[in-house]
Image (cartoon, rainbow, N blue to C red):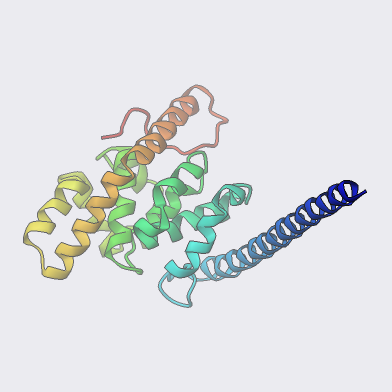
Length: 240
């Protein structure tokens, strides 16, 4: 009888432990779902601001580094968002640099027709130099140092933007990495530090950048044979 009671007690103990574990897992899942909903609401709020105005550095349209850490936790789930929002999240990742994990966001946007216009928009320089250099490097790797395919898509206002014009000149005449290496050796202390940081990021995310550029070039080749294709439109084989 004592043995039976011992067995029953053990079973009850095991059942209690299993129930406690199930409750913990359920609470964890509910908290995670709540966090995901909060992230979706945050993305919607910032995206709406970003769509409204031409100035990226005003009104808090871009998601800050601290908040973007939360976004990164749900990157795999957020791939289901519409393409414009995915391009916006790439823009935020490029703004936040290494902590934005922009190489991984670039891969998520590799078939997104909104990516190149979003990268070009970053060249305006309204939100700092480092986002300009990151975007310039991606554009150069994707379209080569012949920027004709990018220039064709710029609006009149963008073509007259001095920062965009000077950045494209850098791409065409030197290449982004060569320019940054020079800046890291001869620029002001602040610019040296920024250039060195972006050069480190470029090395870190080189595999993702190459994968993105190769995909866009393949899509460009498909567009030549299939005129109805609506993918990114850099010249095929133009990467540097």
